[in-house]
Length: 210
Image (cartoon, rainbow, N blue to C red; front, side, top):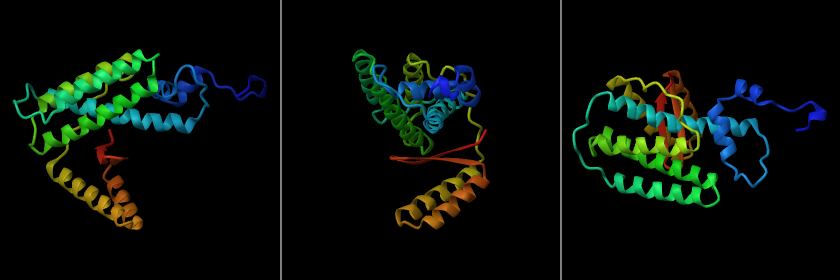
């Protein structure tokens, strides 16, 4: 960008086009000593990544609103959360290595997503997930992320959830056998149910549009 060419963007203009926290996440993805090429597409990607973190926090708030969770197995979540905190602190002590610190946040988010699935399937108690989500917020706020309060995720009707889970599973199977036409058809059907899919290296998660 060049002021002489008239293609510069002010911060005020940027925050009108993008979520301010998504912009911050994008900027933190590069070390402060390194140059950063502007890309609106990358900011949008950062927004989608931020939505995954916010979704976990919203789910934790919804579970916490039910009251103190009963005790249950933590499946090693407490130990994993402690390890991620140590990694995060080490990254920040290493000349404010924010790209590495962000990597830790998303590793923790994957751990929490697995923990949330275990809770929903009755294989673990909710306590470890809630503690982990709290730690995610604490670490993220060190970087100025997850500052804005996110409304709790809406309750999902049991029959609708079963249908969505089935469609998501069928889509993953279609992708495994490289039947991309069927996978696209199932995605379209899920979208008609107001489902937002998040494909990651650990699998596919979903949430309802607010």
